[in-house]
Length: 317
Image (cartoon, rainbow, N blue to C red; front, side, top):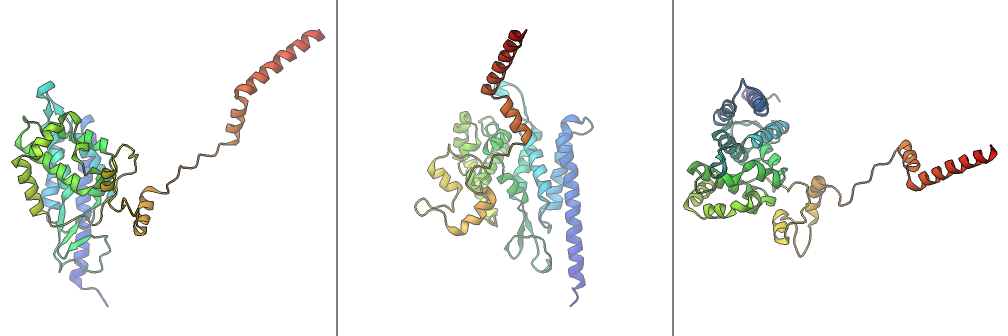
């Protein structure tokens, strides 16, 4: 049976729109990385371009999932530029461009795309994640963020500059929003203290207890219409410095009394591999020969042989 003409047109439209959006993002990402070495472009112009894509192409659109590698580069580009500061000592603060990148990071992290339930054809094969009949989510950016080390996020976010008493209202609201997004979206980031410079945690604690934080979190909760399709696992790393309660939050599928359920094993194996040390690389024949010849005892024996040979030659003379 032939496909309805309107369905075919819709598939072409979705694919063309996706390619167009990815092309625009790709251009801005290239500039985002190169802006420090290119005097012909400014960081503000690049971020305003990304802002346009977010506000007029992504928000409320019907686009399928975006290319993961592009989202990885976008994430790294934003992380590279959202920590720029200006001023000295007590007057040091994040730049306006850094705050723009910080805000975009949060918006890409939480973006929800809406789609009319009667428009998406059933034969579309994109890996869409449908949470309600009218909503699909783009998970790639969120997934990329989940792979970042806590120390890298803390260094790039520079939350401590955005939660001080002297910070602007916009900076404080953005800081609360990002903290709330990260701690509720990723199990290994459940403790906000891991994301804030230790000497500035008192400022963040006061901010989180303030009416500003309550208003931001309340607005996010009321506006959030979806949840992640599945818990995102923490990145492979050494977690020996984490307490048991914190580890239980990071790996909610593990039960402290019953252990790991069998249905959770495949995903963990795919993410972390087997619980064993990697096999050491096999040395080449030349490497083995060189190791033998440069062994300390072998060198002593060679030296002794040379001395003995020299003495024998002297006796013969």
